[in-house]
Amino acid sequence: MLTQTATRDGSFKQPTIQPRRAPHAGNAVQAGTIELMGACMSFPANAEIYGENEPADYLYKVISGTVRTYKVLVDGRRQIGAFHLPGDVFGLETGDEHALSAEAITDCKITVIKRSALMALAARDNEVAREMWALTARELQRVQEHSLVLIKSAEERVAGFLLEMAERVPAGGAVELPMSRQDIADYLGLTIETVSRTLKLLEDAAAIEVAKRRRILLRNRSALRRLNS
Amino acid sequence: MLTQTATRDGSFKQPTIQPRRAPHAGNAVQAGTIELMGACMSFPANAEIYGENEPADYLYKVISGTVRTYKVLVDGRRQIGAFHLPGDVFGLETGDEHALSAEAITDCKITVIKRSALMALAARDNEVAREMWALTARELQRVQEHSLVLIKSAEERVAGFLLEMAERVPAGGAVELPMSRQDIADYLGLTIETVSRTLKLLEDAAAIEVAKRRRILLRNRSALRRLNS
DNA sequence: CGACCATTTGATATGGATCAAGCGATGTGG
DNA sequence: CCACATCGCTTGATCCATATCAAATGGTCG
Image 1: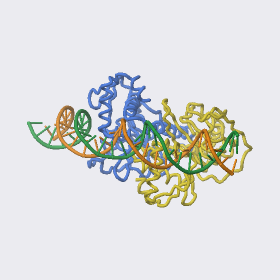
Image 2: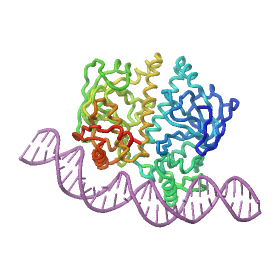
Image 3: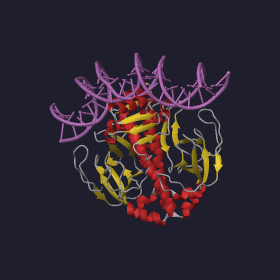
Image 4: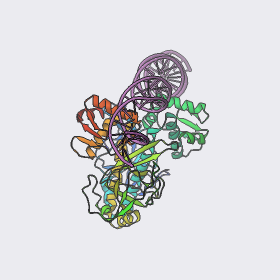
């Protein structure tokens, strides 16, 4: 899992071990223990972090950059399960193997902690155990929420996605998307063409403005919320 | 949550408290603690067990019957998140409120345990804490698996559903479905018409046989598995 | 038996996929 | 600094899987 394999586009880059960093100003969860125990690693964009069915020996926390976790069917269809932003913990499993694969979307710094060490700690300190459980439960809730996309239209899916990203990256009226249209499509169960067209629809409806391709301004959040159904 | 409210079809039935039952031969998880501590209750078919956003003061284990958990959008679209069969635990949350609603599909006997009691126990006994975490993680994995339906065709969804049910209700070559076509449709993100037509398709392909409406015989599992993609 | 409700079956409509160019950034080598 | 290739994205035309609308059927229960 920590040894690097070939990436999606065929490139082959080695992650570099970094000296421990001071705790940063992440936006998400306060999983303090993980940050303290882990070693910080760097992954270049598109590097594989771990693969589905590999032994889940480590737990990960994003320091900087963005990570996608996903599954692929035999014929190549890909479903992205989550985007992980700075502060997010991922790779949490109780089984021996990872249920999804993980890749860096952008260059990433990630704190890595050995599962066995954390489990040993959790066995003694039930505050740690509780924290692990809380992280898992929060992730469960997120996935349950996401599974509503099944019954939503393309417009509702895209509107919901923008709102989700907007509140995870609190940056005023604009959302800076770290991921490609293909990633968005695979997260929402759409094609890139439909994502593109839907963004234009929302723009024509004055709900958003596509400033740069990866930079979206939310002009009318209540309209988006209405669409989010 | 334990007080009964009107059900979907307008009927209004009161669950009856039952004397404690001896542990039964459930098929799923061995969450022993729950069974020991809980009181057994009966719910008639279509009774609400709890609603979304109600305080999550209790945890539930199915003794007999089948339960659905679901979310509904404002306009009435419904997404079923899971079917819970005998032995399954549901209503597990770390937050204060339930993320989904729960209803009995058939008449049910369900063991109910007070969250506060379980939490107190978990704080002392980290074997219990571990068990709670394991249940949550298993549920997370199930939902992640289910979210692949997003990228599957109707045929793949229905084939996958039948295989899933078949291995959860180990009853030889046949699957006895406790839920309606509408429930199946809302679980798979399809319409009842598409579910019905797809079953016929699978029957014409000699993969299954629809013996009675609710009784499906799996004639060719490998064909189904191939379809499951 | 008769009414009702769940399910199936049929006809048609449509949202999003697919196929196929265009286009505009970004980077490369001359 | 500019042709030129590349890549990610957009735009357009057409197709198709599934939804929708509408009956027909059949099983269940009073």
